[in-house]
Image (tube, rainbow, N blue to C red; front, side):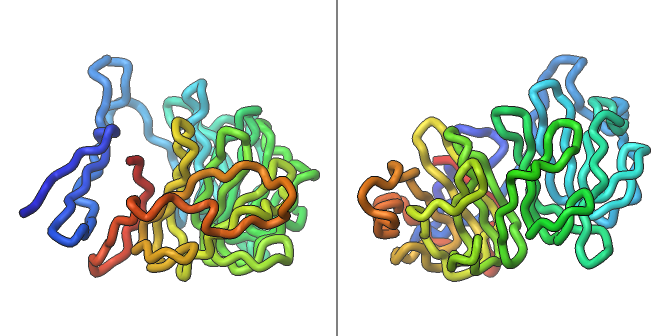
Length: 278
């Protein structure tokens, strides 16, 4: 028998069938009834772009939107892969990074997140930001200036990231090394960009999405994997945020894993590629 479950967030619903098979069946944007809310393609929000693609966005408290992808112009402004849009879709000229590059061409951004201090962390596939070497992740201030103190080295593409309440950054993707230390596809960075030695779930395939739930200190991770941290979690896992390491530099990975009761089995033909809250 099919049981339909709606999460506490009305934009996402799941179907759970007999053996806990999970599939995404709906993702609908719910707009407010207020006339001021954006509800149609005619409300004035129409950013002009010459984008190859747009992959990610993050909304500031003032309603402006950071947008990342692979493009040369956005909102009527020349911007390489990262831009800031006003509420009407026009580009905000106060945010003026030189841009993101990969091998001399436009880089690809797959993730953008805003920190509590207003700085943004960007991630994807690139080797330069504002003309300075960066390995697939970087941090910018609200004007687009590169944070020279933040320079993690990640050896391959980052597809997802999120900021925890303590401002540590959880990253996921196709990488196998962070700051010259082995990390398979999932890692956590300290606020200064150094690797968190106590977090190493090690999923066995690409991570596509990450969401941190501050209410219960839980990180939801989704992607192509079938195993993570010695537990068989098919494509959707959850991890508690462990306490800071004390006498041990690297606690066992099992210490950071949610008890096995949260272990949904996805047996669909394609991987689940979104993060969900319980």
